[in-house]
Length: 524
Image 1 (spheres, rainbow, N blue to C red):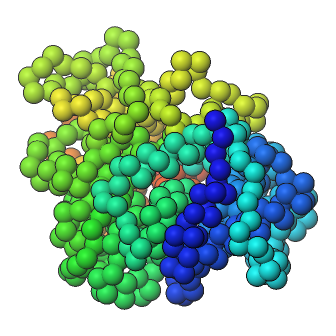
Image 2: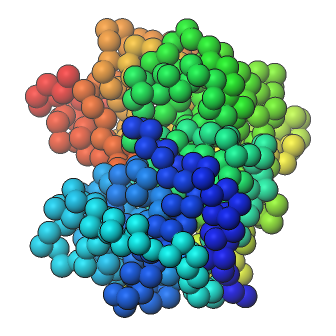
């Protein structure tokens, strides 16, 4: 099978030519004709420089118009687009380069200045303006083999250094078709999608899907209330991609306001709590759609429609975990239950026989080829199943419910505890901006569960204990600590491993049946 990315982009340009494909936060626009022209010009230049099909070609750009046409341009070459998060440090970039083995990096003047001396062949988008303006808008690049390596993403690195996640062009194509097929409505020219997360992951996936229908993407570099307020007030934004961290910022910034016109809030990447859903629903209406995706298998793995999401959070008994919906077409889910699961890991579903949580395995046509670490490339199992590292179960309605991460499970006093369950119960604590539940080693308990709050106010620990009154005793934190800032990775997710290290580095443990932590110096 071959794929003609070039033909598809030429068709979009012919169909939607002058319509804006992308607008940035300064309201600079890139039309479909310009997107086509710039992307083909970059692709032709990369080929002139020696880029080969399947070769890793990196991009290092902030959310911007350039990030979009560069992404399209690298894909046209048949190379493996390797987007680097603009929040990466130089050491992280070196690590990613060693895994993906890229030489070319397409960047802007700021990025080029940061990369000086690292040995890369940098291509400055600011220096390409003359070439872009003179490019032939009707250019055609060669077709691409579907089995050729087509993209390399990187895991979030929450449990160690990031790993490379390679996709073939065929898997990339399949993922885009599946994402379009599961949209809650079909965009049209003029439909506007607001994106505020880094373009390197979910934002780029939705950009490709949206633009395929002639819609316009509003690409902003983060959540800036002053900039997005006029957009929300205008009623001209049809959809927003907002993971829970973004939703929390928006609902806090515009508390008490109601915005009309939003047809869908796309969310995922992290568990959505009932408290945050109800705030979002009050502000935008019952139009939140949840999906499950991973670096190793992009969205959508599962989908929970806006109607089903509203029913789940308002009508049903709260589940232990986070419901992420039914498998998308072509996606298979398998739960690998642990052998001889202890009684406290068993759950009862509607009077049926108790079943244990297990690790989630999946396979799908749009899944990655495997993983790349410091020892090389490791393909997925021959039968196609991928071991996700996530814990969960399938409920009585056939929906997938996430309950935690295998790597995050805390073993304390002979029990296995999922910290996500505790964090979900503590999500309603308004006396702090965020809470991480983690653990440190203990000779007496094995591990001690600790709740760590960011920007905590007086009485926050007592509020936590009140929220956890109905929870089993072995799941409750034995210590409560407040810090100014919780360590996060470049994607903005709290890094539990670093939180644990912070505790160990700044506190002295008095172990025993009633453990105590004493600060070596203040952490407030």
